[in-house]
Image 1 (cartoon, rainbow, N blue to C red):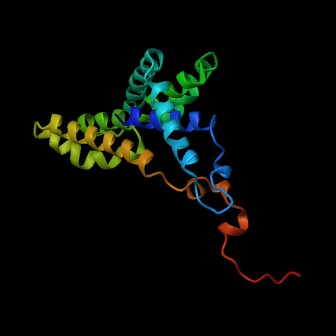
Image 2: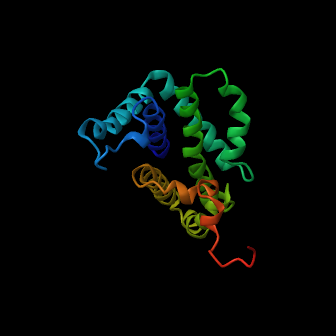
Image 3: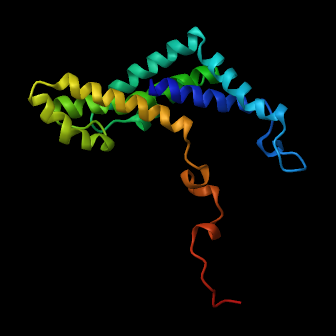
Length: 190
């Protein structure tokens, strides 16, 4: 579910590039016109339509399977999986390659949760906290309950990011000029 939500968000952003430029969204009076306001809705609809093709859904499912495996193996993760899959994506269409990558990145946290719950060995660093609660539940015979809780948290967390995205200026260090990132203090140089 998290992979599906992430892929829809990425597809919407990809199809938004075909429409109105974000810098041109406001008119001379500073307000967004009605025709441009629906441009983003059209982009989201186009992203969903692009994802709901049989080929993209197949590659999304393949990516989720690969992501579960790479997430479950300690020491490997999403970055390693994407690095190994990169040569395979060169021959694919962009939407298909994004579906594969979205499936991988959406399923890696769940794969890490499986090993954290069942083996007390987190697949990646973010799954270390799952060992504290999940493994004792597995020892009590409630592993299914712990895996269900991890799957629910994974899917809800994956849906939250596309709905409430982080500001890009905070997420990307190079987005702001260096003088805005450092505290302003008077310089002795003239």
